[in-house]
Image (cartoon, rainbow, N blue to C red):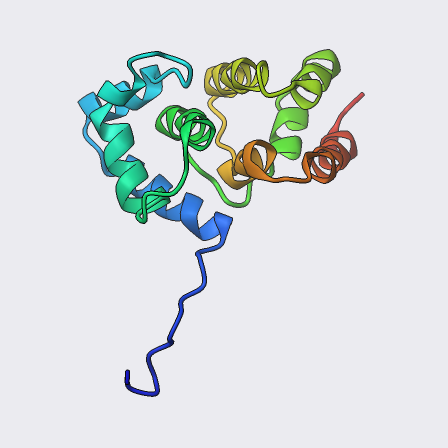
Length: 167
């Protein structure tokens, strides 16, 4: 019997805390492993060769081995983005995009993207924000990729974007 102060079961970490831990780990990587993550394409047939991705995936994201191909692909998108743009918990995705002048048509394409097109749209956002020297709350992007109720996530991001949009 464990001592009374040790929980019998631990709850999974919140998505925000998981993204925070990943951001810290990615931030501590050397230039080579970070570049490896930035180049990571979620649909590449040789994704399994990305040592840095699988090390982070196994140690932080899915230590029990759960996941599967779709799960890995979505996390590959997130880790590639984290390697390119700094995680800033106070920088909501919708607000950062609006304040940096991200075009409404491009914003609509991001939110309308299905599973096949979302990785390309996220890469476009990363490229755009990187060119503007912006940071973003990667937890918002993680919700967009991982949540079962994507419509609610899209509505929340859209509300923030239009609240801060200058148009």
